Image (cartoon, rainbow, N blue to C red):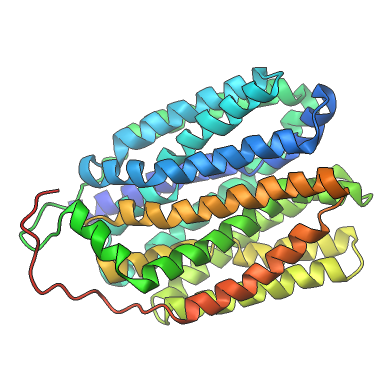
Length: 402
């Protein structure tokens, strides 16, 4: 095996480990909403707002961490992100006020996630892998986040039941610290500057002038709204309907397990079929699955089926969406442009998780937010139908230096 191939495989492996830890820890946050809110006397909106702030800051900082990774490589960005993530979990475990919760779970973890998740890691992978294998490689790395969710959720629930929420979060902070040395080993190679490359400013102007780029951003808003609302509020929704807490954690674990298959399959399909058409069908099927879940009688069995079906669709959007960005604009500024698209995902995440808590405290149920999730599925399906994957034509390279 030649050195370049070994380097690429190591990059994919280390990137997968980082995303597995970052996403695995994050997907357990919904399990803490009920015990923390009850013990500390909060309504669910306090917890929901902190996680909404987390998703918002994650998205707002993502284009900047992406641009840093494009220019200097992912290693330092991931290491610093892992440190912030670990500190956030530690202070979250010590929080006893709404302000402390917002600063720890919201600000620190939000910034930490921006340096340890998809845009930074997939940008590094996209630069290292040949174009014909790029969609598949992104699918593999995205699937690692789902494996982390599947593998770590039962452990998170076990820690919560054994140690209580505060000590469980401190242990999770120690696990997050593992991303610091992993990031230090993630020696990706930023694309060498070519005469044909355009500057960062020109890349931003180019993307801003493409209708398809904004349609992709709006579609990813819907993805964020749906998955974070479900990931945070589903355990509480099931508990409110008389279903045991362990069923909620099992459903989220099933989402993670089946999303391994879903993201891998999406990555493979994206290498053979139109990514935008695949995204249209994916969002339509999501809408059907959510509709069936809230219309038919709720039981542990229906919850498990919902987890399996949503798992197949959960992060399948990620390799397809990032694959379109790479195909249209190239890989020179992939982490930064992917970060802008991901910002819209996180704006949707903010709205989904916060509106879930807000309307629950207002009406005592999640009915309105479920209905919004269905309507947004239809809108996203329509938006992706009109996205072109044709690479952008550049007649003359920019002379401006990034």
